[in-house]
Each structure stands twice: as C-alpha cells, then as structure tokens.
Length: 103
Image 1: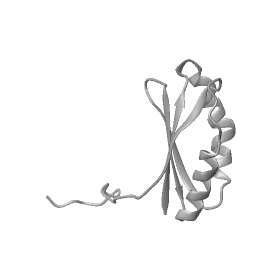
Image 2: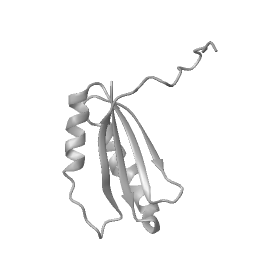
Image 3: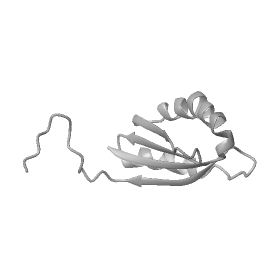
Image 4: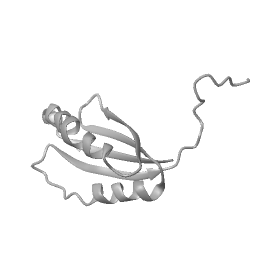
C-alpha cells in the first residue's frame, strides 16, 4: 500500500465552493483511479488549506495520480490550487485498533 499526500491552497472566502467541488467532482474522480483503496479529506480551521490522503495498492498507481495532479496548471482566479503532492511511506508508528502496547 502507498499513500499519496495532496495539499491544496484555498481562497478562504471561497472554501465552501471548494468543498462542493471536492465532493462533487474530485472525490468521485479519485475513487475511479486504478488501485484506489481509500481517502481522507481535511479542511484546515483557517480554511486556507485542504489536505487529502489517498491510499493506493502500489507506488506506480499513486505516482500516476500524483503526476496528473501536478499537471494541473496554477490559476490565481480559481478558488484553489495544488500546493504540494508527495508519495509518502507509512512508518507504522500508530498502533492498530485492539493492539495492546506493553510499557
């Protein structure tokens, strides 16, 4: 499993517009991508950033989506722009539910 981390820079005044776009277009598009497993979408309290984590079956599939995301041109008139896209590795530090850690 490979995780794709995407950060979007938002116009905070238009954040509601961005959330509608994420729900109506971007999340459905992401779910259709080859190797997609799950995703989580987070809006910062200041409404200036949205962070998206997407799990894929393997690195090449995550890389394809990363490249497609990075290919989106920046547009200052748009309510959002891609800030950062990274493929990251899970360090396995979070315990699984039900796992007991001995102190």
